[in-house]
Length: 160
Image (cartoon, rainbow, N blue to C red; front, side, top):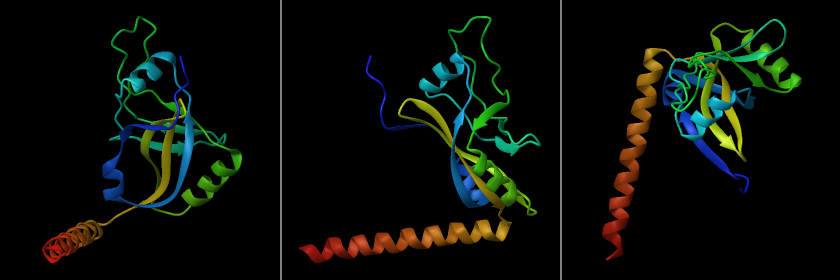
């Protein structure tokens, strides 16, 4: 069977971009069991309540990500919300630790995907948005959408 190439998105945390100001983004590998890989290949995962952390030993962990049990698994099936190790370079972990030192920052997973057959998670150092930030973001997005619509309709009528 030929090896998988390219990037295939499995799960995305859309709420993270709404609730946080996204800073530096990192791509990390995931340490998974066989049934977890099979579940991800079926396209089943959720990052809704997930977050990441770096412990005192300099290891990064993905916590509370939901990868459901494999439906054809046996007694060796994985638990759905287990803590999973993230694979990052030591320099990246050191930079993340420095960035996390300031108050109000957190490490948020943005997406899980397969990159050339390997399961990856995209994590970002983020700071929480206030309610007025969220409203302003929504207003800016709506204004941009309206401007694009007006421009598209103007171009449509000017052709003929």
